[in-house]
Each structure stands twice: as structure tokens, then as C-alpha cells.
Image 1: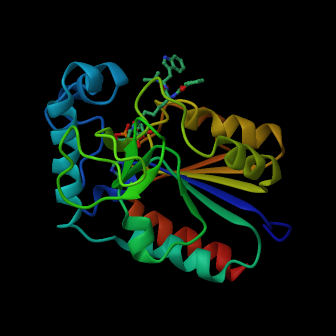
Image 2 (image 1 turned 180 degrees about the vertical axis):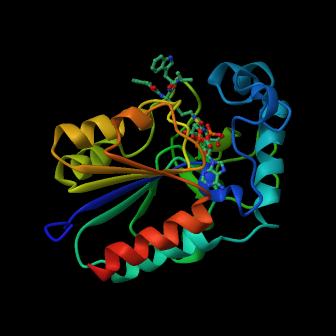
Length: 233
Ligand code: BV8
């Protein structure tokens, strides 16, 4: 660990589970009662914009009722105290990392508290309900949509992520099933570039075999322990 300088952390829905937010793979593969392909694809948005906008309105509202947990707070402490490079890449669209104080953070799948204009590509902060046909502040057209990366759409900041993975000495995956690409492939990219790899998850993910070390348990317990270890070195 002594030569450890550059860390990349990937987080998924599991890190927000103890805050009370649902993960994607609930009972029967339903997500808040919906099939993913009915609410998280461009086709679904075109077919039934009211359903998709409502789905994200409900999740944006749920965010107002929850708080960051000990895992978010531990990563924010790492962010504040780690002297080397750090990048927290979250697949989550909640703002719990920010609310815990994380700064060196990016949302590769978008954010609930943001709206994207399908006409001009501009983004604007958004709270509360976002009905279909809402006007864009930048171009005035009625084309605002949830600022979410749907299946089949290119995740955000992939160049920054790839640069960080190429420089990483340690890649840590927290609370993700390893079911969705390109995020699920980051561990292999990091290993290819010589990074050490650690998985902190409630159960083995689909990519567990690629991690040098896997620790099973709730993020609220595993992440503070791990951050203490890293900062003690
Ligand atoms: C793209 C939106 C290309 C935000 C999401 C075949 C092979 C490979 C790839 C593909 C393929 N067919 C299609 C693809 C591409 C596709 C994909 O990977 N499909 C999968 C299903 C095979 N990927 C895409 O489409 C991506 N885009 O590839 O673009 C492209 C190229 C050029 C030009 C244009 C396009 C886009 C993917 C993004 C989709 N959007 N979310 C939102 O609505 O929230 S994905 C969504 O699911 C999440 O964002 C996340 O990324 C993903 C997985 O969810 P997890 O976060 O892992 O959550 P999950 O519930 O699955 O797991 C939770 C884990 O936590 C579990 O392991 C559990 O044990 C653990 N846990 C639970 N509680 C705790 C805990 N751990 C610790 N403590 C706890 N307390």
C-alpha cells in the first residue's frame, strides 16, 4: 500500500441502499415496479414520456427524504484527506456523495437533480417535478428531459474515467452488481494498467473474479473500515 498514490473508486446503487434508496435489481428484476426497458431507454422516453418523466420525478422526490450514510461520509473524508489523486466515479444519479462532501466526483450515468435539453444539449439544475415538454432556459424549446444516461446512450466523462483508470494504483468497486457496461469493465482496464483491485459489496458481483480482493458486507461497515486503513498508511 506504501506506493499507493492514485485511487479510482466506482460506486453503484448498493452504496445508497442503507440510506433507503432502492437498488436496480430488486425482487423479480423489477425496479420500483417497472422493467428497466420500460423506463430507462430512449425508446421508452419516445413511447411514453409521461411514464418515464414520472418515474424520475418519484425518484427525485424520494431523494429529498433520505440522507447520506456512513459509506458516503467515509468517501468524503478520503476525498478531503487523501494527498494523492482520487476520482469517485458514481453510477448513481442521487446526490448523496455531494451532500456528504465529496468533491472529486463524477456522475457517469447522469443526475436526478439535473435536466437535459434534447434540442440543444444544455443542462440545467432541476428540483421537483419535470413534466414532458418543459421549456429549456437556454434555447426556449419545449425539450427538457431527465438528465439520465439511458441504456444505449453513451455514459458521461468516459475520457476522464479512462485517463484516471490508466493512472490508478488502486481501483475500488463499492455496491455494484457489475451487470452494466462500460462500468462493469473498469476493473479489467485498471488491472491491465497494473492497479490493485478491491471489491466491497453485500454479495459477490458478476465481476468478482477480476478483483484481487473482495470483502462482503454492508457498505456502511466496510467503507469506513477501508478508508481508515488507507489513511493510516
Ligand atoms: C452504452 C440510469 C454504448 C440512471 C443506468 C451486451 C454486453 C455488454 C454491453 C451491452 C450488451 N448489451 C447492451 C449493452 C450495453 C448496456 C449494458 O451494459 N447492458 C447490460 C444490461 C448488459 N450498457 C449501456 O447501454 C450503456 N451505454 O453502452 O453505450 C454507446 C456507444 C457509442 C455510442 C452510444 C452508445 C449505458 C448504461 C447506463 C444505463 N443507465 N442507470 C438511473 O436511472 O438510475 S444503469 C443502472 O444499472 C445503474 O446506473 C448502474 O449503472 C446499473 C447497475 O446498477 P448497480 O448500481 O450495480 O445496482 P444493482 O442493483 O445492479 O446492484 C446493487 C449491488 O449492490 C448488488 O451487487 C448488491 O449486492 C449490492 N448491495 C446492496 N445493498 C448493499 C450492497 N452493497 C453494499 N452495501 C449494501 N448495503
